[in-house]
Image (cartoon, rainbow, N blue to C red; front, side, top):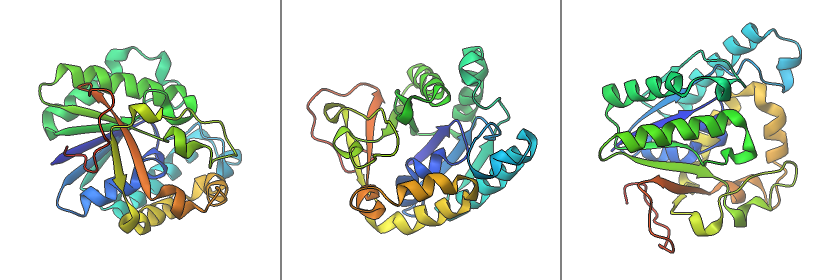
Length: 233
């Protein structure tokens, strides 16, 4: 299987479905990552002391480290404006995804759930672009990663927009691949404040993160289906 992961920022891939990406990359599947921005408008840690250009360079280097830690086959960092994707013409983002689909020929497209985890406009915009591109491509499936409704209460330090439990279609056990996700998290040093908060989640991070949840956005699945354990299903 060829899996194309498309996100807005460096670190989305790791703090998002990093365990799933590592699992599939390490079990014979080809996994490619695309981020639309360099994360130059971030606000955590070193962002307070760096120019946007300096921060973008730092986060691009961090992403290279994370891609290696997750064992992904290839990646691309675009240079669209961080925190401004929602204001761009949709064709700007669609052109990038269409080109990736044409050249990489993925079987599966993965991005954030339509609500964007935290409601971040960049996340939601990329999810819309991916849905449009998937609808245009015969045989391509789109899965949106998110925090399940039943899981979200463990995170008390920020407001989340979880996937309603009834919309979860795939649950991936990443227990055996958490070490790769943790290595990738260590790569994203600029996001250390977020990581410090995540380590304090109720029950411990490893317990919280051992299952990763997805909702199939295209083609739509019948309500009430028992969640699958494999992205191939």
